[in-house]
Image (cartoon, rainbow, N blue to C red; front, side):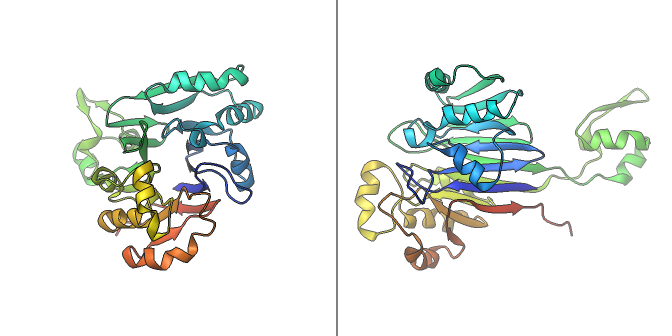
Length: 304
C-alpha cells in the first residue's frame, strides 16, 4: 500500500489558504517527501502526519518556494527525537545548498546523506521506495520524480517442489534472497513468476511540457503536475518563465493515460482552479484540481 498526500498546491509564495507545493508518500513505516517550501512542516502537521519517519527528501530544484522550508523541517525532525539517517536527493550542488540553509539548524541528532543528481535520468532505492529522477525544462536545473513500489511475481509452489526445496527456504526466496541447497545455488527467479504491476506516482512541477515527462507519467496511478495558469491568455507568460498551464498538463496526461491527473503549483493570482476544470476534463476526463491535504490510498490490484 502507498499513501499519497498533496501537502500544498501553491507556487511562488505561501498564502493564508494555500501551502506551497509538496507531496508526501508513506509505505511500510517510511515516508518520502518531495520538495520543502516555507512552512512545510506546518502542512505536514495540519494533515496529521509526522515528520519523524521521513527517510528521504527529494528536491526538484533550488528556488525558494521548493526548499526554503528545509531548516524548519530538519529542526522539527530533530525535536521529534529522530536518530536514523535522512537521505536528501537533488540536483548538482544539493549538499552545498542544504548545508548553507543549515547555518540556522547546525546541530541535528541524525546524519544527512546526499545523492547528487548529474544525469538526465537516474534511479535510486531508499527503503521501500524506488525513485526515478528525470530532468525537466525549467530556467534552472530541475528534476521530476517517479516514486514506485514494485511488486514481485507470484511464488511458484510447483517449481519449488520440483527443485526439492524445503518449505523453510521458500520465504527467503520470496524476499529476494539466494539460497544454497544440496550444493546448488538457487536464485529467486527460479521459483518466482513474472513481476506484477506495482504502484507509481509521478510528480513534476516547474517545467515546460515535454515528451520525457509524458513517458515518465505513462503507467502512473497518479500524475501530479504543475498547472500554474488556467486562463487561455497566460500561454505566453507560461512559456516565458518555463511553467505549464492546466491545458499543457492535461494534454500530456491525455497521451500518458495515468490513472488520475492532479493539478498543482497554482499561481498566487489563481485563486480558484475549479472554474477551469470543465475545459480541462474535456481534454483528460480524470483530471482533478489539487487541494491542500488531498490524499489517496493506493493498493496493489487483486490477482485474477
